[in-house]
Length: 379
Image: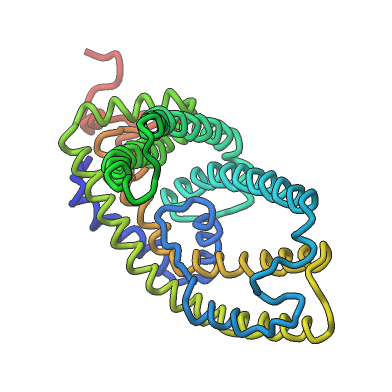
């Protein structure tokens, strides 16, 4: 079986992506893979739409409107209890949404692996099949996130707190005479933060690219599969380091390419939306409407209703990348992990003459008897 290097695995991954999405081209396949891509997040292509033109558009809203972005908050936000309740509700909803998204993404990662490996995406069957392993993977991701947060607090939070307390004890503040302290904080935090992010990313790659196939093909637990993936990495340190480097380069390249396309698609999608929103704000102000719990809830619901199709549209644009990265990991891992190699590179069927008996479907690797051989048991 071929044992591809990180560079050699690119070509078969591209070929597999092309076969899945273009031979033949089927909109249904693209749409289903885009659903999985919304939750798996193979690479980041987030765009920032905080443009000066949009800010100017907001500033031009009539100040007499109850929706106006003036220096004074709307009356409802001056109610401290109501504002605190709103913030607490948003925080709770945000945590719940993140947890739900992470769980769906955990199951979707197995569905994507199975779909790319077999070249067929079935959402309903895949969801029913991979929920158990997805739940295990979800638990491991939550634990890794908690450990990452704890490491950040210990390696960054405590030293920064110590520096700040030392500066305060020395009667320093963060005014003009404390530039050196601020520079010291930045010089300390930036490299430590980069190191933590790099380690967290490496763990996520080991989990998503190598532990998921082990869990899917062997039914192993999440931590056991991650341990197997770590041992595979240690067995070939140079090749694994090169794989991580190539994958990072490919992620950056994909983020740039699909990010540019996503910005164009988003602007086309958002142009009429912004126009309608401005018209609604102006019309609502002219009608005497102001920010109330009802109008705020309505604005949130409408915003979410517009955000979901935009996210799906961006995922549809990124579908080739969604398929490519699991295929790339498979072709790199297959030569180092026999169960995956057996599925990804199946042996060609043996001739029927190699079968031991007509009733035995397991082919024999022994050569057939010659035609003039004596019957069994005859010397």
